[in-house]
Image 1 (cartoon, rainbow, N blue to C red):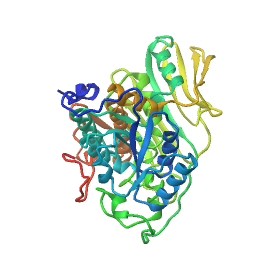
Image 2 (cartoon, one colour; image 1 turned 90 degrees about the vertical axis):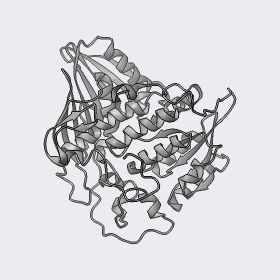
Image 3 (tube, helix red, strand yellow; image 1 turned 90 degrees about the horizontal axis):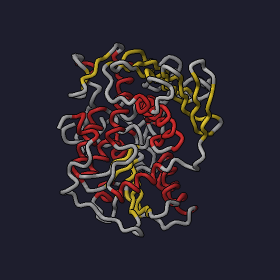
Image 4 (cartoon, helix red, strand yellow; image 1 turned 45 degrees about the horizontal axis):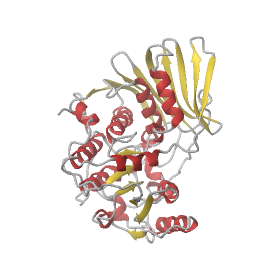
Length: 423
């Protein structure tokens, strides 16, 4: 089975897997791995979800655990058990699934361990820290017959689904190009020296299989996004959403080539990742353009983070206007002819995950799709790091004839129990 087939396959190991059958009234037992800012947001929603019970929360930072416990208390929910080492909850047979809201460098290792432990997984975007890891996540999910949903919520948002259906209907003609952008003003994080690990933080556990470097506040809570050991920059942070929508609209999988630039031009701080990107992905007869500027608040087409899809007879804009999600349709002359606004109170992405656990059908943002979109995020970063055009070998999921670029297709690990086999 080649890679292209394996990505979209149903569960290769489902027949042999020990999969719990849920009766209509059975609740699903979920454990949270990572209860920082994003994790607490997900936790708050899960505590209000019918048919779901949060049994455990796991984090390496006592302060994050205490904040999560405050969220539980406010919701008047039953207090979940607290663990500091994820292996404890992965070994618990009562846990049906885990929700992973860790830094990017833990996404792949934690998902693979969970699948191998018989757990379904909801993992935040991007799917993994690098191309190789999300490939191993697919293999772990398929081999073990597990559900793995990636946190690209637009795959479930009704207005975005309607936008894709409109584009696929042919009403804007033949679709030739899509543009995804991330334009917002982020903070300059300044410079900070390495320092002592804060009290209550298991820094060794936080690092996991990543290379050991000293603790630094500018590489910790949220700011880890901007360091290559732990994050994927804003291409993998917010860009994962817009790039996924654009690729979805084009109906493409692997790009043939990625070209352009990515640089740190305006922030004079400790961030390693680019603050500016212009990268084009080429397919046979189509292209996807990715633009990122995180030093300015000026929107594009009235949208800060959005997507435009260009056809031979019109175009569609997908995004959020004045906090309202939706899509706009323009005719061939550029005149707006339709504005379809969101009406649902939420996108229901977590609900889709839980429903998939019950039905054993692939979720809306299955790891196979998450992997393909994450490849684009990683290739944008690779182009910025090597400073040249790269051609992609889809069969082997590597850059063609470029030893330096292929250093970033995977990563270095230190000796650790969570290092994925085959990484």
